[in-house]
Image: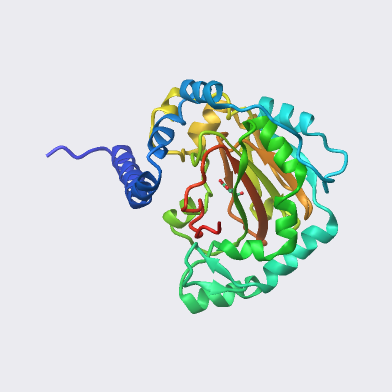
Length: 318
Ligand SMILES: O=C(O)CCC(=O)C(=O)O
């Protein structure tokens, strides 16, 4: 009998892993489809550049009026943010006021979070190590789900007029908030491939809507050992055909960097309060913290009716 060479076996095993990752998502996909049949064309076509362009031309609505009120991001104009987003897919240099990022961090230290997206694994972040021992497993992330919005400072950032102005000028007049979350990423001794992939520690692009925008804020000082976010500049508007004609959104670093070049990556280290906004159709990922936990906030915008399922498993609030 013919024995396949070792590298064939590796590639068969990798394919098996990919199919398994897709298979576990099927029930979620079916729920999305039942709730909103328009999800299916988005899911199949929004990964291809020609269909994305057609959707943009057919659906983009003009911005009726600017968002009202004063922004906490003094001196930042939506025009320069939108220009950078169009060219690079990312703008960095949003700084949260000290009282805001401190209030959120205080909340996140004192409030129970849920490990690895599992509501049965509840603990407070300073007790991460004890929680791993108690639950007998590695805990890579701690999400707050609907509790994020119990924090007034989180709601203040979510409602800042600069965020909606940027989103509407970049995505079109119909842009609206579709997700707001804060979460921890923890250094941990061992983690399964599935846990790493679910926690977004792999280059991927987001496909929850035809067009999206995500604002991220580091809520602790983030250096190379704190698992910084990484974005691939320009990858929101240029895409290998292979990465358009696949159902998978996650791809190996060699493939992604081979196409865009390693010099295209931006690593988002920065002090607590440092923020950036990106087009998440561009390739991006979180990296695994090796030294210190990272606390992060995200406000995401989209252009379609938000699905009842939240994108990180949390229940719907409206
Ligand atoms: O943890 C991170 O920095 C990555 C988050 C991410 O990939 C996402 O929100 O899509």
